[in-house]
Amino acid sequence: MPCGGCGTGADGKPAGCKSNGGCSSGGCNRLNVFDWLSSIPLSDQATPFDIIEVSFNQGSRKDFFRTATRQQYEKGELIAVEGVSGFDVGEVSLSGELVKLQMKKKRVKDTPDIKKVLRRATEEDLNKMRVNKDREKEMLVRSRVLARQLGLEMKLAEVEIQADGRKATFFYTADSRVDFRELIRRYASEFHVKVEMRQIGARQEAGKVGGIGSCGRELCCSTWLTDFKSVSTTAARYQNLSINQSKLSGQCGRLKCCLNYELDTYLDALKGFPEHANSLETTAGTLYLQKKDIFKNLMWFAYQGSSKQYPLTIDRVNEIRDLNKQGVKPEELGQVEVEVVPKEGEEHAFVDVVGQISLRSLERAGRKRKKRSQEQQRKPPSNKKGGGGDRRRHSR
Image (tube, rainbow, N blue to C red):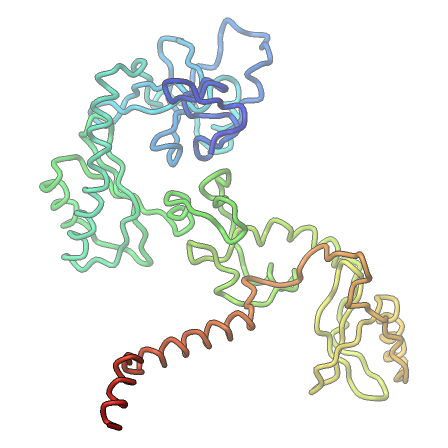
């Protein structure tokens, strides 16, 4: 989805940013980096940085190339670069001093082995690229059939063909090691290209496929998230989320990356809560900790075998702990009165639920309609006029 400044011109290209689909906002291309140095004059204009970042396949893959001729390339230009025994066509996604930071972030060293930029893409290069790109879907279907015939436990996610058609990269996911030596021979004889097999993870596969998350926005891994950190159920426990694998998992089948976004805030808030306060002794019995409310600084306890929960402040929990250490069991809890029903004119700021909301009333109504339609289908069709006439003739 283009940004608000991308007015479409008569030729169908964005006229606002003039980057032919590579908006700086990241809406027209995946995993873009905003070049915030583009409008700032640099002190050393005579020797600009000679390495640029080039994106391929709408930003799903990026690489660095050296401009041997010291020619300046702007963001969004299509250029021809060195490939495997040929050339490839990509889009300039970043140039200038910010490329140094990107190389440092991705741990790419400035060595003579970096491939070079050949030229700006000509019309012949673009036509050849379009012809080869049109083969990718058909090749993906055929490659899956060949892998299934060999009985390999792998899933092919994407096929990317080089612009000149001499090389094809097959991206796949697998839970264990796969011996695809025979598969490579079949691919080479079937498609007549140089074959490269590249294994990716489930999160990288979701980033390549793309989609809409449960939040209603485009997936983070296909728009801006470049590095994937491990996510565990501990992050959900700290945030008082119910451990439901189906609700906490993303489209990749792994735990959602957004579980880590607010984890640091919760950990900082939980520092004020007392530790080792999982149980409290009272005259009525032992109270067990159920949950912690960091927004109201309350701790909810319940007696064993009872569903009723009692909210206690942090100060009151510390007082009861100190009394228990002295061997004293308090009679009164000193619980806090929590108002559940909002006052008149007040609105809920948020809904305290996890995952999808199940509307029981709608489900019951749907079942009734389904049952009624099934009963109508079982009854034989009857014609009221015909039935009445038969009865009259029979009575005569």
